Every structure is written in C-alpha cells, then in structure tokens.
Amino acid sequence: MQAELDGIFGVKLPVRDLAAGRSWYERVFDLTPRYEFPDEGGIVRGVVYEAAGLGNAKFALRERPDIAGLSGFDPVLFGIKDKAAADAWAAHLTSLGIEHRVVRATIGWLVIFHDPDGLEIHLYSWEGHGADMSGTPGSGRAV
Image 1 (cartoon, rainbow, N blue to C red):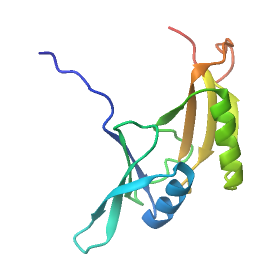
Image 2: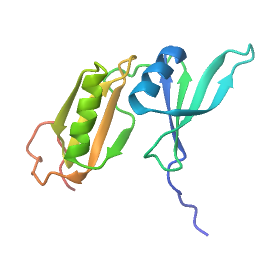
Image 3: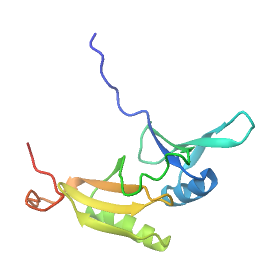
C-alpha cells in the first residue's frame, strides 16, 4: 500500500492572547469549542473547535506570543461557495466592525481581513469568476 493523505485533520493558528483570540474567532466564525489544553499550571493555552463547513477538520488556536502575528501572511485559505457567499461574509464582517475587502482573485472571489494579531484571513470562493487574471500583478497564472 502506498502512503497517501486522507484530507486535512485540522488547522492550528498561533495567537498572542488566547482569551482575545478566542473571543474574536468565536464571534467571527461561530465556533463551538470541544477541547481546552491547560499547561502545567492549569492555565488554558490552547483550544480546539468544530466549525460548520469544515467537515471533520478541526480548527485550533494556541497561545504562542513568540510566533503569533505573521502580519500580512495568509497560512490558510478557507473555502466559500461563490460571489454571493463572499458578499454575505462581507456583510457579516461589516456588522462586526471588521475591516475587509472583496477582490477578484486568480480563480474566484476572495474576502480578505485580519485577526487581532495581524494574521491575514482569506475566504476563497470555489466558484470561479471566469476572468483571465494572468496579467494582473499578484495574480497567478496556469502552468
């Protein structure tokens, strides 16, 4: 048998302050906490969530102020259905007072915003827009 991957088990992001990160991520993504991870002193330093739309994959936060932030970097792209979903997310983020933008990206629509530590969050539509973006700076091109 050849070794192969079987999906994504989970995504874990570092945060500077777990309480602040929990509050923000739970509010934005309507997360359901499932596990907490206390350190030797009993202080909770991590949490694992179930999130609607991620199937069996888990979403986790880990308090790691030494590496949190990655300001302007997008380590994970969450999938959304289409342009209507991008618009719905934009309205949701506006209602929460979170700055964001919706752009036509290489393949589909992209909602971009930042968490409290400056990490760039991307919501990318599975449905494409059909435009050729290969000549647009920052856009990809087929190989």
